[in-house]
Image (cartoon, rainbow, N blue to C red; front, side):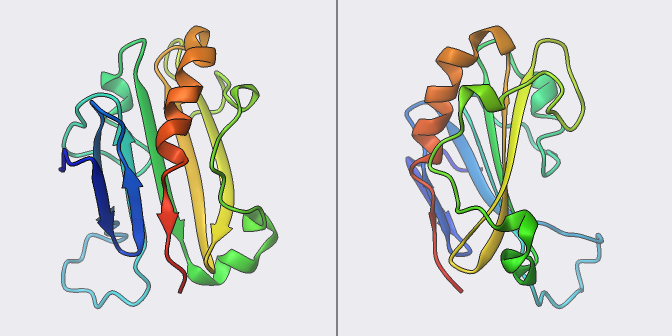
Length: 158
């Protein structure tokens, strides 16, 4: 994990707000470390709390550790060929909206947590932007903080 203000890898970068933790890594889709990687699928994880090891791509392990004022952001890359599909037709967002966060928008609902997910593309690359808030009642305060990090994401084209 990195605690630097800016992290970059695999044609992605993000500037982490003060006090945030983050990592960019490549997903191992089948657990075979001997595979030849032909289509790299990186993931950005960023949070305003210390990221625990062993996280899933959508934040399992991390979201269970979140407090009320916690924010978790995951940006997952998908197959490059998906970038031109209808699902990923929207441009990469520089912000998510408060109204997008809901109690039922989580990979696995947890009490009081809220999530938002947007499929998008940038530079010929397909992504899912997924945010989780520790407390739905604090969404008007937490979403602007999440957006400070999201607005700094840079995606290099293919």
